[in-house]
Amino acid sequence: MAKYLLLKHYRGAPAAVNDVPMDQWSPEEISAHVQYMNDFAAGLEKTGEFVDGQALAPEGAWVRYDGEGRPPVTDGPFAETKDLIAGWMIIDVDSYERAVELAGELSAAPGAGGKPIHEWLEVRPFLAEPPTITE
Amino acid sequence: MDEVLLRSLTPNVLTVLVRRGADFAAAEDAVQDALVEALRVWAADPPRDAKGWLVTVAWRKFLDTTRADAARRRREDRVEEEPAPGTAPAMDDTLQLYFLCAHPSLTPASAVALTLRAVGGLSTRQIAEAYLVPEATMAQRISRAKRTVSGVRFDRPGDVATVLRVLYLVFNEGYSGDVDLAAEAIRLTRQLAARIDHPEVAGLLALMLLHHARRAARTASDGSLVPLAEQDRGRWDTTLIAEGVGILQAALARDRLGEFQAQAAIAALHADAPTAGETDWVQIVEWYDELTRLTGSPVVRLNRAVAVGEADGPRAGLAALAALDASLPRHAAVAAYLHERDGDLATAARLYAEAAHKAPNLAERDHLTRQAARLNARRGR
Image 1 (tube, chains in turn yellow, cyan):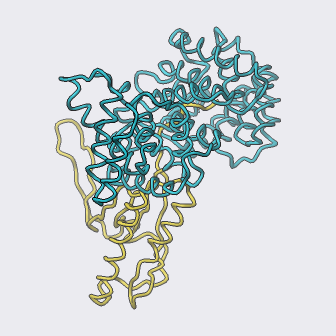
Image 2: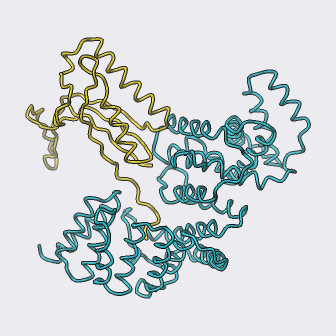
Image 3: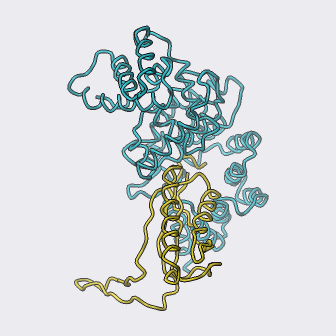
């Protein structure tokens, strides 16, 4: 049992095979895509592997501490930021192989022309609790 | 009311229902409902016969949810003929329940969840919290597991090794939540050991007890890991150690060695040393040789290299390590430790940092980062 983050990028991932921006899809293609994502999450719930799924707005700000008694400094958004997270899904699965299998399935979500996007998703393991028996 | 005591009745009650003809999945749900009911009403009105009460309530709940009227009438007729609860021997049925919940057709995660619910009597919410997944996900995992084993005959003996693997997972990969999964694993393994005479069951129980004995000393107050050599041995639980050693010795005397007995033997040798310096590493290496023979596991060989480093010096440990695949988990951490012992602080610091980068959990990563930082500070950077 291990948790993995399936990370979707607005920017920063290698180019997808079917790399047409979503605003150039037909409305039906968008609906089909959304439906696929919902069905995928529902399927994961049924198999007992779903933990969380969230989408992020593309625009955010950078914030940092600016010293005692001063408000935090904000900056951005920066158009040149190379890596931009679009959202994630967290799964709890029996193996890394299963995580890769599911990421592959998610990457097959339909896009322009109703064809799979073949989008690159990042698969990252969570740092878990240490096991009791180590020696 | 003692919740653990209540939960310990779960397998008994469940098997009574199954023996009366209820299918496993429905009976299991009914028992859960009865446990919830017990938690609600027993505090104010405790029954004299706890198990009898649970059987009656669970059976009623089962009948309530059995929709088909004809089927229901048949079962109600049958219940009239049932012997009084608690009179039938339930030992073997409980054992069957362990086998069913660890059935090889289940994935490890499903077997763990089903065992904790059907044998352990934990609620879905408790199991979900323990494994940090949503309750809905855990509910699906459990009902899927129940469907998977629905066709499995309840009267055939299973493979005890699969049950032990599940219990080992509960103990070793337990997370957090309001349930102490390590203690729960020990309880379930004790219950199993009382029902089956098998040296490896005893071996696993001994292994758990010996590790559980060190629990208080294993983490510092800030939550950081304390390595075995630096643990305050005064905080080890000597009662648990004595029990674990006793169980292990009885098992070893049967001369049917298995991997859990061998692992427990190593834990016992650590527990036996008044100080880290007095550890009998030569014997520990011998046990690792046994374990390697039994499992062929590269992880065992990695741990063996550490023991060799202690028994015959760091150069010997590094030589043992050289024969192993560097991509093994914790390979860099072991190499770092052996190089430090060998006096090569620069290499050790670099390898500790590399090991931290690859660490599978936060506590280990923090620990390894500290090791690298300590050596870097000593070397004056």
